[in-house]
Image 1 (cartoon, rainbow, N blue to C red):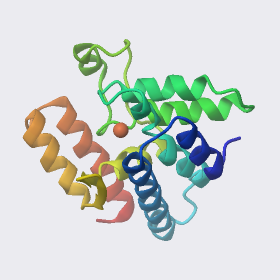
Image 2 (image 1 turned 90 degrees about the vertical axis):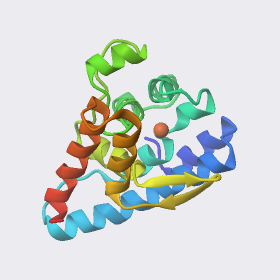
Image 3 (image 1 turned 120 degrees about the vertical axis):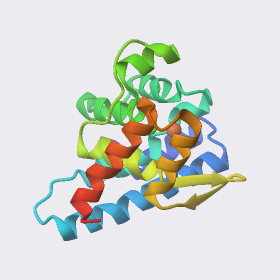
Image 4 (image 1 turned 135 degrees about the horizontal axis):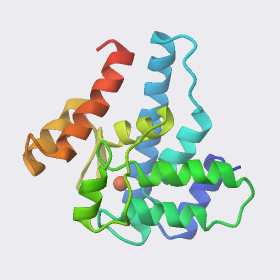
Length: 183
Ligand SMILES: [Fe+2]
């Protein structure tokens, strides 16, 4: 099983630039804060905190190879190719990588984007958390800035149009957490 230090070592071994590491660390920190709020407001909620932490640190590992939208899929390939024990957990981390972009990528959208056939939509609470928190971290001249969750909605609507799949997925993901957080 991978822990945070393994994840950091892996980023280093793939020569992840400082801005990428800072981004991933910030997404991880935001995830940890949101988990505390979720637990406070939903006693008994089950979240694999360690998986979220490692997944947040590694969600953008694909960016060590490509900056395109396929970095999610590439990240999944990197994780599955690791020579460590615990293949079930590796699969969970790989899915976090593949499903973290925006609020997820529908099958139709994936096809249009030229990604391997399939849908890349966060399903587990751990997958959703990483995508949700990643959407709050804006990178301004190489430095991470934490924004309000609605920021991503505005950005996606601007970039893809209000009625686009991409914007809808981000809105749905935010709504999921708003309900749990009582926002
Ligand atoms: Fe990413």
